Length: 233
Image (cartoon, rainbow, N blue to C red; front, side, top):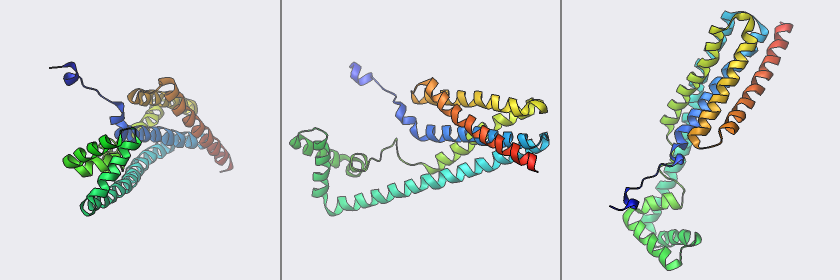
């Protein structure tokens, strides 16, 4: 058996679907919950109130992320289904036109026209809808929408991310909360950014810095608002 037949490759693009939802969920969970905790801590030193706010943020956020991802990705899935249905009808009604259309796509990519037409013909014999979905519509196994997967992944990773600032609240003395939670959150965000970058094959430092920056900004804003309203009330 030749080396070409035994050679296999694993491409990082196959992780796009779940990786996007996982990073988004964990990042949102850490930032929103930590910001909420810091905002409440800046307004009141009551640990119970801070924990209640954090748990409420975790629960509401996880459910919101799941619902939002499901609705959003379902809309994408509906659009894909409608496009495939239209393409399926066109293949039945005007197969010759669809053959020319597919051949033109390959010719535009640099394949000689006679060969492009032959390639299009052979691909349509095997799987006409699959060929048009992939090369005309840009729908593939990697990019296809998966609403349930996105919703579950987002909810779980949001809850996991939100649990980290809550853990910092539980382990830290009350007088240090306003400092320990932001510090721990920055570390969590940097680690998340680095892990996401590693899973996607990107630069670790860039990924860590990018995520940490927005977390610091969010906590600074909410801490300022909490301090202002805490003094006013």
